[in-house]
Image 1: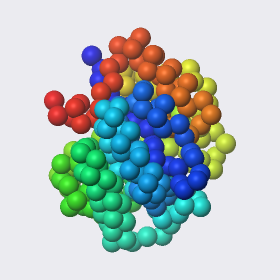
Image 2: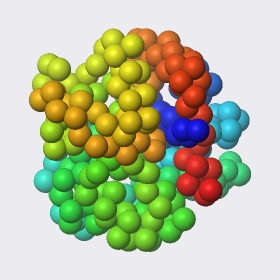
Image 3: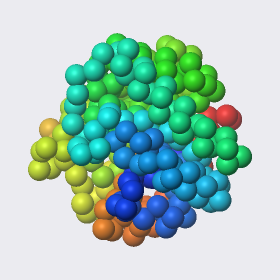
Length: 257
């Protein structure tokens, strides 16, 4: 039997601006990554999203990003490992406070956007992120791009890690995601996206834009909740997994076996 986690970024609204259909998506995912106020979100949104996650019984993760609301945390910044450490401690601690106040438990940490991609390739930055997570709570699971420096850093720091793959993104030969600046970065066809991720789970392979198969570990799968057809895709991928014999379960339960 194949068992994987299905995660989604949430809590990315800000003030009077609403992004995503969070509550609807809660019906289909097993873990959520909640923005911590740097790239998106605010204290009220964080509290509301934590409450929803507890209500729906999904795993709760902190989603720390770069301090760039205007760029949604997707623009790289030159930061030192020490700055990365401070940013992650600050944001994870903030979300952890809301989780504890609401009677829940924080399950994992997944860096957002540019911070995620930077830490995937920059080992000193990855080490700083992993140390920040460990120092806040050594029981937390660190999400990172499958095969990346962030996964290696997490393991070296003594953390449980979850190798993440993306259903709607294309891959490069080195295992990295195709930059969103490129026109072919996203997979918009639902069937193509589902077929890619099912192969990643069952065969541990993915075809790159260079038409080369590479090995990949798929422990948690990211779907995005801010697109026009996000809920339809979430429902579609869940049904496809059931038909393919893939069971969905929160990553905390999967890794505790």
